[in-house]
Image (cartoon, rainbow, N blue to C red; front, side, top):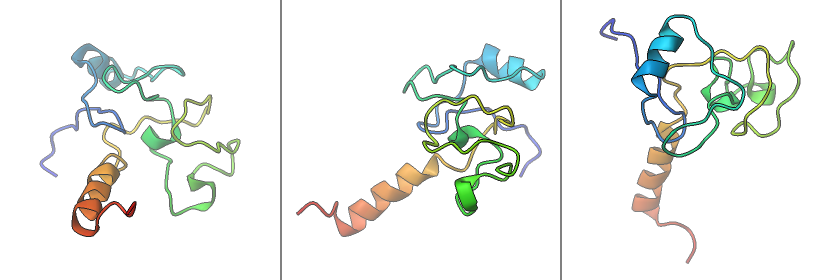
Length: 109
């Protein structure tokens, strides 16, 4: 890491949040329950963009002992433990899948 703060981005498409919104978050603002990405429309207040999300854990959540189970990690939720992760490691997954399909085909034929 070079010490520079990471710009907040959408977990799904990687689009940076509006600069005004990013400044609000940097100043301690919160992602609203129904807030979504301006480009792809994905919910931002969801497990996929939460600092507690960890696919290796039971229920995929580090805070699961204190939170209600959320079955769909990509949908908006009302979790009170939600902590927005400015640049979650979830977005590159689609790039990896595209690379696998390029190497091995899409498996549909």
